[in-house]
Length: 473
Image (cartoon, rainbow, N blue to C red; front, side, top):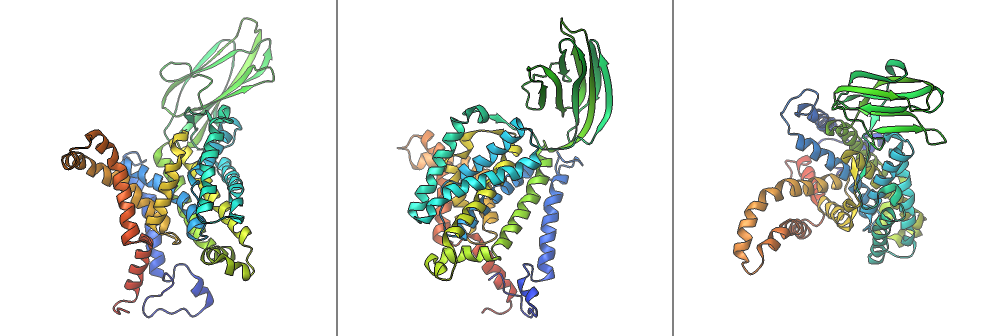
């Protein structure tokens, strides 16, 4: 239905027939919508302009919607277009989140290299759990992918506890571009305390101290924050440089809070002479919600556009053929097993990207955020939005997020007073705790009954009715 032109508009070339935006007006509306998304943070209180026209909570909400749109779009490639059911999508998101966190914390990767690396790693794990699709499908494949939902969190929790923190929250450093070079450099020797002004919300100061000449034992290097407290070496904003013997030879610290910092270099009892170099450079930080917004939203739009074009390729048409009739697809020469594995790989890659963005947006990870209910919730988002439609992920995620963060909090006080009166034989505490799942499940049931093909299907019907107006046929 999306390929229907408005009345009086005809395609005259093959290139026109292949265009996604069939009319200049449609392309203009998409560009205006994207521009509005990019301008939204500038109108918030935390934006660089300091305006308060849009609440900061809405900027954070759009970022979370963007992250889950990426995840559900990957699920759409697997479930909506290829017809393979997966109940382990939250586990694949966990792989991307923890892989990117470990790469940045332990191996010194930047966010920009950890993002593709974690996505590829998640895709390879997705291939492993896609192997059962050779022999089973339907309900049995759902059970096979459900195994991933239990195996992957267990591996992250216990065998990899030293890297992931196990049940403890894992801190994740904020993305950063730079430093762009040292704007200040000082050489210090002897017991020296050097004070200076540093720190900014967006253009942070990267402070580095390096011992370059030594005779005797290494001195003790300390960085004091604006409050006068010595920053611990375990601070995830600090990188400690050590030699083979474990001696601290240098520090690097990211100063975000504006104020007066101090670097103290103190010789130990056996130190005879040393010289240290203090450098300060500026870097663009994405620690704030507003800054992360400009990573998440453009990447979400790009990946949605990429998924839309994948479906137009030979591989995408093979996905649809396998979904509609895998036996007929095999008779037509399509390698069904390879096609299913490609779908699992692409779906896991999208999940890995979403997991990486989620880790850096929250700056902290916990395995409790990647349980089975997360996988079921994303399936519900896809069903409500419309499986097999390019905009299904966007509609489904937006609807569920608005339901959970706007509609349910508004209805909850009213229902908390009404339901105990209607059901006096049930403990009011149990009723209050059940309001969220009742409303969520009720919305899902309504959509399954009234609009089983999702919001995106109704949107396509509306667009066709608008294009062929004033005719009713």
